[in-house]
Image (cartoon, rainbow, N blue to C red; front, side, top):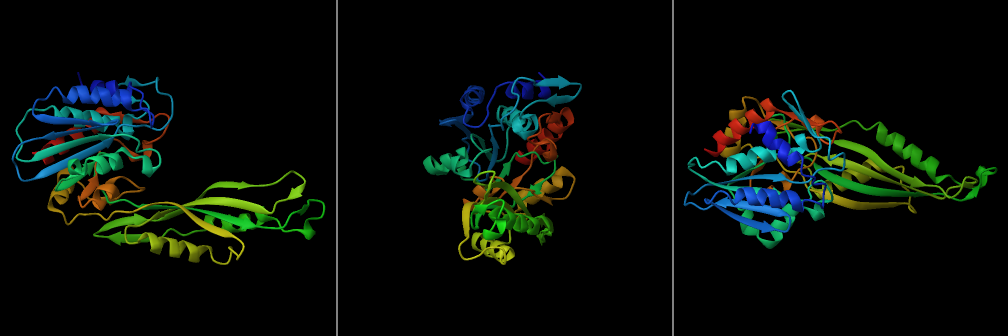
Length: 349
């Protein structure tokens, strides 16, 4: 079968987050076809490792799950595979599977990680599950996370800080609003302030990261004839790798200062750490050179941060245009898969 056909097989197996069992089973069965691999199943995660005696071990990881969507409209149109998860990231998974089954000799050891539940809360990640139950399986000298990157290296990743702000007011009848204080109107001023945010641009090791701040959810109101006394809003802040959790929180508090009063609340809901570019690592620098381009900063958060937390230098590199991820008509092309397979294969050799 062609690479598009192989990828089509994976896209045709539904694997929305928390429903990866069938796809994990398929990949496990395929990996066991190679007697040179030690294959382990941990929940809906599958890890395969070569078992030679080379000193260097490289790790390649990809997530099995997709966001919700139409799971049954996958199709190949000319040289495009269109379907849920084609770009993010089943096209790359199919290449990983192909190379894992390739019997060609290598001068390094390889660990292949296919993990569940990346597209939902980080606390549910299958990569964290592997790290908790079998941390030795994630040991490596360098790693690639096969996120769609357009065939180039997207180094590091942004951190994610999610906070909830609740503003207070005073209830009143809407016919006499001057006797109360409208919490939604207060929140409108704060949201307008956030909408005028100018992104902070940071350059680290020659790689540029652009921070972002967005209001992502609003809740408030009592009844159609009542001035509301409370309104809450959730904000998502994408943080460059030069800031820690405490530094990001301190900055955000300062930015919102003047809109939050004593009786209001500022609550941190979630934090996922950023990761630096790691381009001082010779293995990752060689990957950049093999792509024929220069590294750019990863927009968004990925499990590169999880691997880096474990002391494994890691970067993002995969098939497909990252701008297509999570779109209803996402796709990956034959050229995308061929380029990814060539560069990854050469890197592992």
